[in-house]
Length: 151
Image (cartoon, rainbow, N blue to C red; front, side):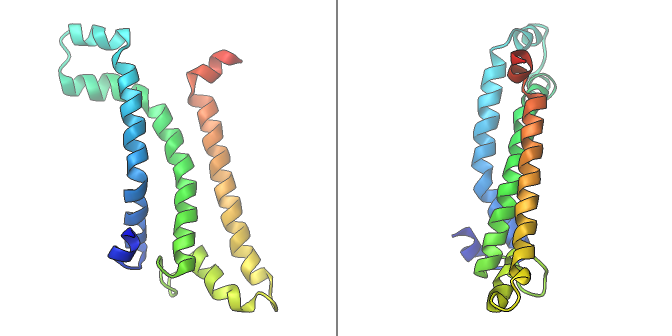
């Protein structure tokens, strides 16, 4: 619905995907901050006279970055799929600009004679999303302290 309002184009596609994915970041950030506010080091910083901006940006937020970084890598692959789907439907990037979804849409007519014209952009999307998801899993394993203690 957002893309229909904004219209087709690269910038509008990026804005629409960002607007749609923003609530998940807000929920994750709020949950991480609420969990960190009950820790002893936050209470100690508060008793030491830390101001609210210093408490949030220097004390709490750096300890909340690990789940946000993992969420960013995993939602980046979702953004690639969303942009490709919008381009395939004709609502995303328009044909003079190269984009995987528009490449797949324009190659539909040639699928019976030249299967590789459709397969290569599809395979590129698959490999990109898989690589980014594997990187996100690796970052989660490296940054999550609960997984470090389990080993």
